[in-house]
Image (cartoon, rainbow, N blue to C red; front, side, top):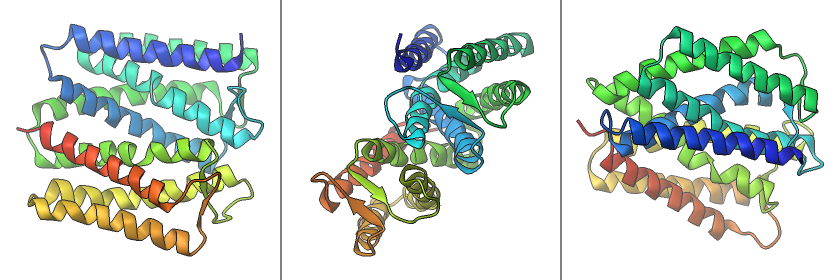
Amino acid sequence: MASIYWYCLLAIIGVGIATFTIYQKRDIAKLSTFLVFYLFATCVTWIGEFIVLGLFNGYAYKPGIYTNPWAENILGHLILNSTFYPGTAILVAAYSLGYGWISLITVIYLLIEYLFLKSGIYEHHWWKYYMTGFVIFTYQIINKVWFKKMNKLQHRLVRISTFYFVGFVILHFPIPIILLLGKQYYNVNWVQDIYLSSTMFIFAYQLVETLILVFFVCVLKKWLWKLVPFIIAIVGQSILAKLNILVFQDGWNLFYTIIVYSISIATFILIEKHTLNP
């Protein structure tokens, strides 16, 4: 079986776990709350991946689609960290599983990692098994605690913090896909590889951009302020294009990028308006 199918199999399992859990535990939280938590848990993995994989090259994904190793890493990251990880996080959080069950889930993760390594579709650089065990166990505990706080929503800060993570996922998700499709990249030359350099730049850029988005949408409540993130996105991407930092390929252009940005921002505004309301 081709490598990519094993990645997709884990993705299907992750989404299946999330779907089953949400259906079974639909009495403890709204569907919209589960959706927001899924995006929150996804963002936690993305930030961890940015540090361990992007900055320190701890390991490598090998789904077998691209010849470029960093394109492979981006694809593997998107598949697993957007499906399998948040899927198990919802399972742990919704059922409020104890340390024994969390330990078992951690062991399953380690077994999967072992099988992927032996199959040659994943590779350790300086990363070790015990690091995976510690990270997965801690990740599940953090998500379990956060889900309880988020579901009760006793503090406004919890809501705003949650939507920061949600906003980042919604804002960032289309960008690596466009990059992998060969439509655009960010020419900053931070490192030699264009995939890694583009990802590092836009990831850092959107961490700041999401702060602005959340401030004008979640903190300032008047509808007029919600226009500001659209303006900032248009101006920001236009400046990057003018400076030849944002480079287009294969018929793609600034208008398409702005449309994608606008859809992401509008989606976030709708989610924020209709979810996690006390």
